[in-house]
Length: 169
Ligand SMILES: [Zn+2]
Image (cartoon, rainbow, N blue to C red):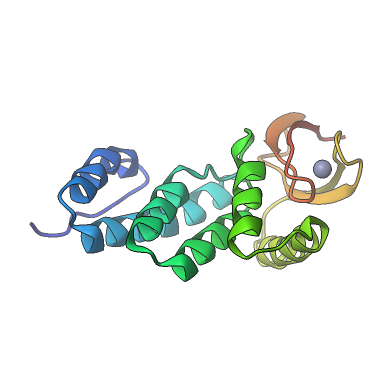
């Protein structure tokens, strides 16, 4: 099969194809597709000023786990954890899974170091950003704002990982 072009308009359709690859134990193909989709969603979602959902990262982490590639599993979870993250309960669970994999109980240091990586990442973009107080941890955090008109949006706090409704003042 020739490699199809994965775009913003069609990438969600590849979920079933990837599952099919995994069922047939064509893991290299599944990995290639997942990595291409992850590259794409990082470009498009960040450009739109919205957080990233972890679905495809988790699929890839599952694949690496199945292969016994612990280091790759850690790396893909890490890659997700430093992105601007969509709302939901997953972010926190992924952080916990990551900590367990690297045998760390020092959640505060992990959160701090991921937040610093996140900051570096979003400072490189030319998007609208703003310091917003997290309703949960009450820290002032730098976030990408979807647009000037948006007054509130849902996301996961990049410092405490809680799902929140953030109010843009
Ligand atoms: Zn917070």
